Amino acid sequence: MRLIIFCCIAFIFSPLTFGQVEASTIVDSLYKEDQFYVGVTYNVLGNMPEGMSQNGFSSGFHFGFIKDMPINKNRNWALGFGIGYSANSFNQNLFISKDQQGETTFELLGNSEFTKNKFSTHLIEVPFELRWRTSTPETYKFWRIYTGFKLGYLIASSTKFANSSESLKQTNISDFDTLQYGLTMSVGYNTWNVHVYYGLNPLFEKSAKLDGEPIDFKALKIGIMFYLL
Image (cartoon, rainbow, N blue to C red; front, top):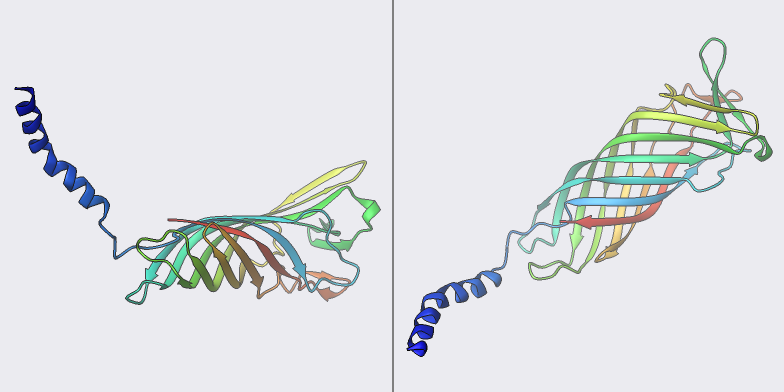
């Protein structure tokens, strides 16, 4: 009797069991890749005026969403378009302050004149990418090369200065260029990807001058980018 009951139960549930096995082997032929990103970078200033230098660790933190749009049958080529957020700090010896008329002034400091001197920027970014990867519907570890262009809109900026006797902070410096844009590239395998951003325009407006000369340094960001589905 027990054998008959067991056979009946097995017969009833066997379609569900096989259905689960079949479902687990279904391949998503319309898959998409790497639609969320998180990255950290080391920020470098290029084309600095004579006498200016960086000190300490200048960092960047970046995250966002990129819509992945495959453009060929194998889906290993795609376009990416998205939106993200970027926070950056630059430790250096350019002192940014305001005079009695409220105008922003710039002055180079000696390393012994401060214990902290940096400026920070916060941007909403719109990345565009041309994406190549070796992914397949069954493979989650693959090589990738993503190249593109990133447009950033400055939403906040600040400066911090400190020495042995005082500490100063300013926010929303008008001399920063509101629009920041540059070229990007991410290259890697699986989790680890080297990421580079090269700014094409200066961080400051043309009105920002040091000793009568425009401050036209640009940002170079080098770091690691992590991609998630």
